[in-house]
Image (cartoon, rainbow, N blue to C red; front, side, top):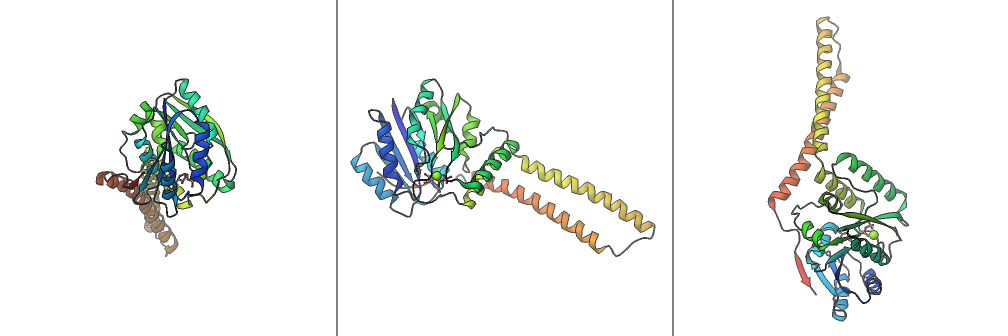
Length: 302
Ligand code: UDP
Ligand code: MG
């Protein structure tokens, strides 16, 4: 049985050698390959990968022409993998290599996809924990796929699952959602995420918002519906107000009414912009798909 390990890496020069040592230790005696995807790093990440691959036949490296993001790096690694099973994990030590045997054990019990769930993340901090929890509650309300809270992209897939996964052609990818949507026999393994080994989190607040929005708009058209409902509600209220205004006018009670006028204008303007904005987001996704650009470009390999 051949095992492929896939590691998206963005400015992880210090973490890669440590991770590889751990993986090598855990998979001693196994037939494995370790694929590092350098996602347009600005540090020495790719030289480090090259150095490793010169020493170890197990190491493969791909370097992107620029930063394409974690989800796309994952896709590239998975599509390069040749193993009977493929395991994706982070470069920073937050996905401990010691959990790999548990994943493999589940696979041997007959599961095609083995997901993981973080029990707690030591350095995540209150804000990250709260936003993460809120996000999963929200996404499960808003979308039709079920996504486990605290799930991560530390995951094992059988060859069958990998071949299925590679059939998704969409550009704005939310891997966790796609995996849940795929079906197959899936299992969960729990693990404790330690502190990031070095460097800083590459998921800036902006990237997290983007990720969350991809998750929602990939799997749900509820935001479109909500904008419709809000629009209808405001229309109804506007109609009632118009009736009231007319009656007042007939009774000769009309007053300057600037405030109420402003309120109505502002409210309706807001609702319209909101709806347009939501529609625009979906339109931009369609635009993205229609352009049908490649997912990524590879600049170098080793
Ligand atoms: N990553 C990447 N491209 C990016 C951002 C992150 O390949 O644009 C990689 C990163 O090197 C790491 C993994 O994705 O191996 C998870 O990122 P990070 O640890 O920064 O996220 P966090 O654990 O803070 O959510
Ligand atoms: Mg991390």
